[in-house]
Amino acid sequence: MKTNFKNFAFIVLSSIFIFSCQTEDSIDDMSPKIEIEKSKDESNLASRSGGCSYIGVDKESELYRGEYRTYTVAENYSSYQWSIDSGSNVQIIGASNQKSVTLYFSQGFNQAVIKVLFGNCDERLTLTDSRFDCDCNVYPTPPLSYPVYSTFGTPVPNNYEKDRLGSNYICTTTIANELSVPIERCASYNWSIEPAGNLGKIFPSHNSAIVAVTQPGRYIVTLTTTNVVGSRVEKFILYAEDCDGGIGPGGF
Image 1: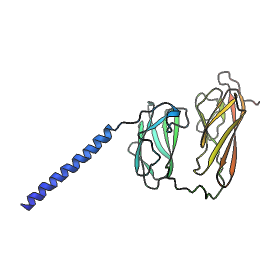
Image 2: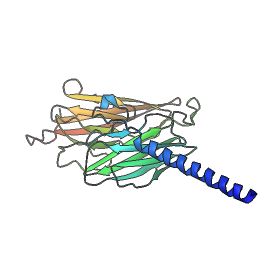
Image 3: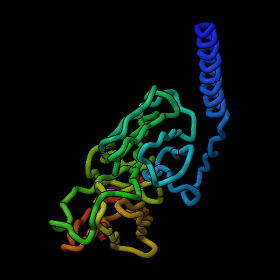
Image 4: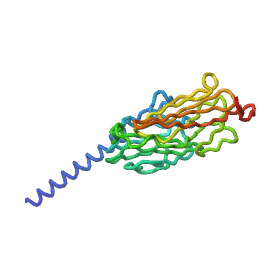
C-alpha cells in the first residue's frame, strides 16, 4: 500500500513539474518584443556606426549580470554573423548566424563589445553593466593612446579602405560617418573639427562621433581624452572629396 502511494505521489509531482516547465516556455514564446524604431534618438541601443541598420534588444537595462538578452537587426538581409568582439563573462546561446542572437551575461560581467556582420555591414555595440567595478577616483595612468577607427557609410571615395583602421577619405554631404576609439570606463571624451561651422560638423557620443563635411578639402578632427590623472590629445586628418563631381582631396 505504501509503495503504491509513493508511486502515485511521484507521478503527480512529475506531472506538475513538466506542466510548469511547459508553461514557462509558452510564456517566453509569447513575450512581446520591443518594436525596433529606425531613429537613433529613440533608442540608446541603435547602431553607433549609423551606416547600415539598427539593433534592437528585447529588454532595455544596464543590469546585465545573470540575464539573457536577445538582439535583433532591424532590417532583413540574406545572412548574419554575430560574435563577441571583446569582453568576458558573456556568451552566445544558440545560433550565431540568424537575424537575432541571444546572449547570456554571467556573474562578473563588466563590459563587452558585440559585433554582427550582414551584407556589407559591420556593426558593433558596446555593453556596460552600470555596476562596472571601477574606482574612477583612483586611476593609475593617464588615458591610453589609441588610433582612431573610421566606419564611413556609402558612398565613399576610391581611396577609402573599408574595415581598415584609420582610413580617412570621406565624401562630402554624407552623414553616416563614424570615428571612434576603444572606450575607457573612467575617461571623458571631447571631440572637435576644423574648419567647423557650415563646412564641418561633429556630433559626439562619448568615445565615438559622427562627422559630416560639406566642401572638399582637408579637415582636422581633435579628440581630447581625460581622466583624473591627465589628458591625451589625438588628431585625425580627414580628406574630403566631392564624390559626385570627382574632385580630389585638397587643402584650404
